[in-house]
Image (tube, rainbow, N blue to C red):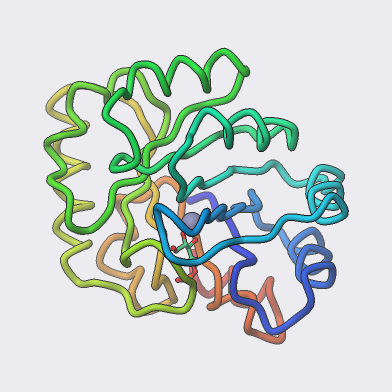
Length: 211
Ligand code: DX5
Ligand code: ZN
């Protein structure tokens, strides 16, 4: 299972957190972007922060929790992320958004909130590279994992098999070495934030998560 680390809630400064993620064996840096519209919180990316992320040797996945997707796709494509993930609920024109991401030569991920019917994803599953099942209501780090997420991950896993598709399944929000247990076998990738970034040893936490 691949690991992707969200630096949103950390015990360390931004710079130190990125340094510690870089020094770990995590597969990705998960860049959460919030606009104060789609979610109440706002993330503030200064030029310096963007530059530090761009220079990190880790591949990046950008998770847009925003409206105005075209604008944010343009801005965050400058980080050269491997993948751009947007929230399913942020648009009604998925084909247009998927095309805009692919035009920038990035893989496409769709995040789906805990209250949205999973079946709505079906028409788009053959066009995307990853589904990010939200384990919390998007908007902040350090929230408690919603148990309904277990059934949702299982349903997506079955759907993928039935339709003979090959998108990756990932989960984001409330993940720790306990909450991951019931879905471990179904996941290709896992996003984790405070469980790693509020610890004293990032690599040890990552190993506990995926062992
Ligand atoms: C939630 C964000 C997550 C979050 C993960 O809205 O998309 O990436 O920061 O943090 P933890 O693992 O602390 O829930
Ligand atoms: Zn996220």
